[in-house]
Amino acid sequence: MNRQMLIGVGCGVLAGALWGLVFLAPNLTPDFSPLEISAARYLAYGVMASALIAPRWRTLRPKLKRDDWRALVWLSLAGNIVYYVFLASAVQLSGPAPAALIVGLLPVVISLIGSREEDAVSARRLAPSLILAVLGVALISLESLAGAQGSWQSQALGLVCAAGGLACWAAFAVGNARRIAKLPNVSSHDWSLLLGVVTGAQALVMTPAFALSLGEHDSHDWLGLVLISSAIALLASVAGNALWNSASRRLPLTMTGQIVIFETLFALLYACIWEQRLPTLLEVGAIAALGTAVLWCVSSHRMPRPHE
Image (cartoon, rainbow, N blue to C red; front, side, top):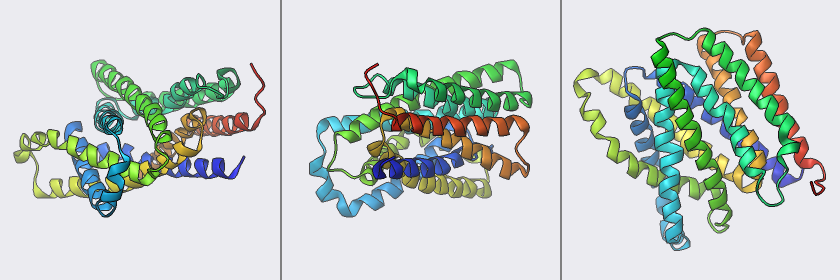
């Protein structure tokens, strides 16, 4: 593995560690709707991104074309606003199982899309790692569904939200990787901040949701939402997205797809810490399968690639 690829993998792992925190947010703020949770997080992200990018705005602006701004708009919607509403809804409706399905199946979807690109590792060579990824997701989902509560209608709606989130983030991951590859003069961190500025502007449209529930929450609830949203915005959005963009710039799409697995692994780790328990046998099996899937994927990219 060359140095650039090693740095890319490291950035992807760190991004996954920070992104795993977002799975705790809906459970930490259960009295707020998914729309309110999403709006609060991305308003905080927009404020932070605007403050950080302001000193470099004059030199950065001329580097962006109209197509870049169009990409920022749809990437922000798909990968941030709409995705997180789906994610929060899935967690609140039917627990962590659908959320695990969202992130757990992303490596398969993204890697299969990436395998169609020129000079990419073929889907046939990636097949063992993809099968292991699916196995890991299945084990996590079985564990979560075993303790699932609520009506079948709630579970079904949660799965629909999970599927919507999967589609949104897959579109974001592929579109974002292709866009930043066309912008060598814009750093990964600056692109992440630009996404934050646009996402924050889009989140303003959702602020009426707060007015509808002003009388339902006391000052303690609102303070908790602000603090948790700000922490998630700083760690997962500002830092995590910058690390992911750095990984996307250094790694082929077939590999970045597999690196997403670390979000699932860290989300599982944080859940165990939060619940003060050790992983179950099924969860240990899932961790082993997902970890092996990533190692196999990395190994596949180190092999010589004859014409297949």
